[in-house]
Structures are given as C-alpha cells and as structure tokens.
Length: 146
Ligand code: DQA
Image (cartoon, rainbow, N blue to C red; front, top):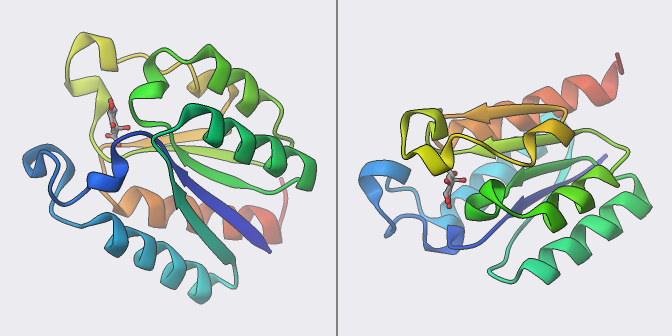
C-alpha cells in the first residue's frame, strides 16, 4: 500500500541545520532511507517536504480523500498551527507524528504539539530512526489492523 511521508518547514535543510540537534543526515538521505525502508516493508513510500503551510494542508486533504496513511513531521508548525491540526483531523487512515529531536527535552514552546491529540501515535527523540520505526509500525498495522 501507499504511505506518504510529509515534512514541514525547514526540514529540507537537514544535514546543515543545527546538526547537534537534528544530526548530519541530509533531507535527500532521509528521503532515500524512507523509500528503501518502505520497499523492504512492501510499502510504496512517497516523501515530500514543504516550507509552505497551505501546500502541506492540500497534501493532507488529498490523503484524507484517498484514505492514505501518513507519517508527518510537522516541524515548527507542530507547536501552533490549528489549521494543520484540523487538516490532520480529516485523515481516516493512521497518522504517525515524528520528531527527530526529543521535543520534551528542549525549549518550553516545543513541549506541546497541537497535532499529537489527533495523531495515532508519536515518535520523538530517536533521530531519523523515528521515520523507520513509524513506517515499520504502519506496515504491521496495515497488514493486521487492530
Ligand atoms: C522537529 C522539532 C520542532 O520543534 C522543530 O521546529 C523542527 C523539527 C523535530 O523533528 O525534532 O523543525 O519537528
């Protein structure tokens, strides 16, 4: 089955962006890791990134219409975008929220995600491995729905 891996604002800068916090893996490498992981799991993984919030919301509307499972790193929008949260609430297939860093161990404003309450589950602080784990979970969940 098809799975979307969607990434929000500034994540295209991975590798160069605060490597002490987000690691040295580039966005291109992350995308390749997700596609390779998907192929091993029998998932058709499509990876996207945008710095444009309305574009991300459009992708989520299409995912809702197609009942596509989503792995989402909402980046800074996690912390304040009710518009993004409402778009996530439209999804009917599972939604896994991923954060590369441990948002609970950082600045106060990062500790709350407005997305989490409408996500199926959340992975934070495990680096890019969080995406791999999210995809593994979806593959298992889609083959034997709870
Ligand atoms: C992030 C954490 C957010 O607080 C931050 O704004 C990001 C990335 C993460 O993956 O750790 O851009 O979502």
